[in-house]
Length: 341
Image (cartoon, rainbow, N blue to C red):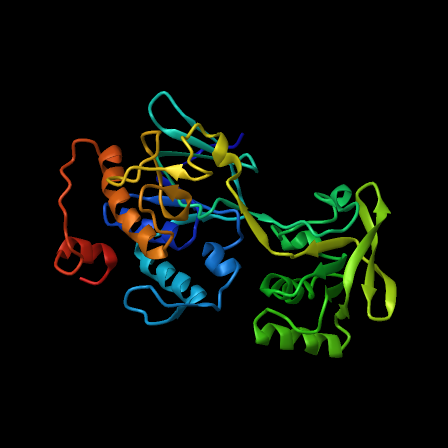
């Protein structure tokens, strides 16, 4: 087990609500570390619909999901939050001194006085494509996310999918892979047009291959891929590959959170509406993952919950300290923290 990384508040989930929690906690001088299973901040806004317009964020008649994430990241810059990506929180325990110890699926250890669960509908789990026998290759030559690009250097790489993740990794890994083949069931893509144009340009110059079709079978031994069978308009063809990245989207599951001893309500975490604290003192839940009477699953609601949570978190981290409610518009001390005084 690695040495523990210590922080005031550990936030599980780096979606919009988790990001705004950093702002509210930062106003009270609390340092935050965020852990997210995705490889970048933004949660489902960034992963599932980055270009989708959102119309119910105050002050923005319309803003893209990624645009909102970018603004939130800009807003919390003065508080220097720390991030750990591509990790799932696998265990949580409360120590004798009241501190929480959190362990990830990579055995990284974090300790914090307060834990905030802002995991949306739970952890994102990649959808396994319906390819017979794919389980035998998972963890060795088939992966659903890229944690270290170097692992693909010199490999014959097969990427399957038509969204932003598939196109982004096609472009990012093409320079270091021995070969790259992109497979999608049709010539139209859901990805950013610029990425699609760049991919087709590389295809035209034979720097990568693009095939229309679906992967129907895998070949290899001992968990090591040698080829994939692609069923296309002209029949089946075997594509040589030593690594495969299927991007078939994500599903949300509560995951290990269900085993942390929290009271649950229909796979959601009940909280009070004063502090948004769970059944375990010191653990809070904000955003879509919580439940209380009248709950609305809106980003706006999560922002409100983050503000009240921060007040309660401050009382845990600085017991006995008088908390003075201040407005950012008139408080010189808050404006200094934000760098605008």
